[in-house]
Length: 231
Image (tube, rainbow, N blue to C red; front, side, top):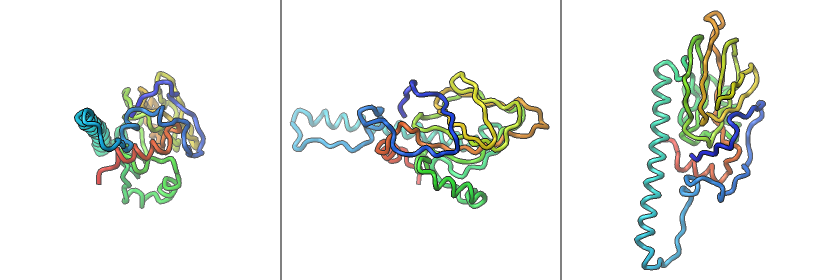
């Protein structure tokens, strides 16, 4: 869950999947990715380093537990918002929530489910991974907020985009378009609004959380291990 503010806030894309390893190496990874990898100590340990090793191990475990709790609380808040009418000012139909498949919803949308299973870069085994249909009703507004991690990008596929809908990410206005994908780093401050009239109807997009292309394969495995969905 490292922050690299040199990343672009928004990456405009097509329907093509983001896949393949990124350009980062472990020397460029954040402390979370490095801390979550196996640590091998020389054996036998020098007598003077035993206490320090135990202390470092305890601090690392505490740090990983704290990050895990932050992620779990964020996903629980997301689920509560959806049940109360949707975090985006309207109903939501989630096929994956916090990295867990929702079987009943997937059976209702078999085509979307098959498409998700074919995306190699979909965060399907991580508590930060979600996918589903988001509806924004006329007059609704999502005030400024930041997502929990920039290890992902959110893909918005426009399905129904009436006039008056707006998305602002990192101070830059963006536009949805029907039949096109918009890739957003939602860890930047962003707002969403539907300024259209009731006659325009709701805005509908299909949202998928994908791995950020700069997160390498080894880092993805480490983050999946640390932020595995609750059983």
